[in-house]
Length: 403
Image (cartoon, rainbow, N blue to C red):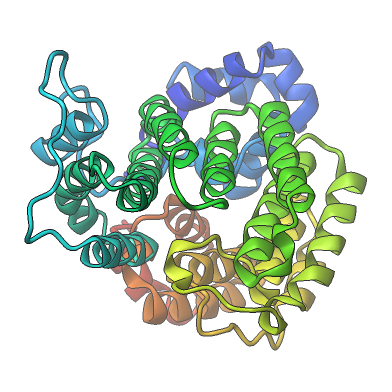
């Protein structure tokens, strides 16, 4: 249930930020008494504006404070699927070295399966991804053991992408330390691969994980460094290279904004938006599912997110109005847009507008909606209103919110 462990999460994030309760109260403009009650679990939830203010004070995403509802248990004893993922990422000591693949192995088939895994991840099909990951990682390790140097380089690329996917799933399960282990191993594989863009793509995943841990300065630094490498090595002349650069630049902007450096964030987003217009005009890569998400649509979605997160709901709605998303915009990004539109309407006291955005989200990405505690938080805020807007009850029932 959303907010069930809010107090524990709030205390952990506050300590990671090296803030006292009084300092967090000052930064967030939330009373010390409310913070104390939440951390002591005398108060188990709070209104969305309060949670929003606390997240801003901590420099984290609101969903980091709320927690992402997992697709499987994230308790002390993980389910067997997640144990298998752990074992694949971190093989046991003294396990025999992987053997080269047999004659029936097909590297193109493996790459297709990994690409499918990314599609499933962006569609919030976490159970399906977790079932597939151990075999994908195992087959990629075997491919990387090929005696043929060309096949070996492609095998390491497949290993890097599969470990990167495992890292993303681990973040969604709330296991950021495991995610960093998987991503560090992915970076090692990328360095031995034949893909010159892969390392930078994985660095972006590390930056996102750092953001989730509140390590904003680290996230900003590595994103800018990797984006600079992409430029210095002349990779922005292709669509794939520009996408990787753009995703890193947007990531840096997000870290800057959460560090209260809005001027730098705005400058980075302005440049990203300008460059995104060139993506469609450049030589295209082979499979967009295996490359970072970056397009005019994704830049606008990120601008909406930053606007609503930092208290400019009118600007967020103006940016979102009339948006036409490109067909390659994943469901996860569509989810963020509609959630942020709902948040903006809520902040402006427009309950009917919030419900309309959530109804759209339920139509286009119902699985993602169920995996976002932000949707639950918005519906809860609307549910306590004296007059329920039309359409709220079915949403509340869908998310398990109500009397």
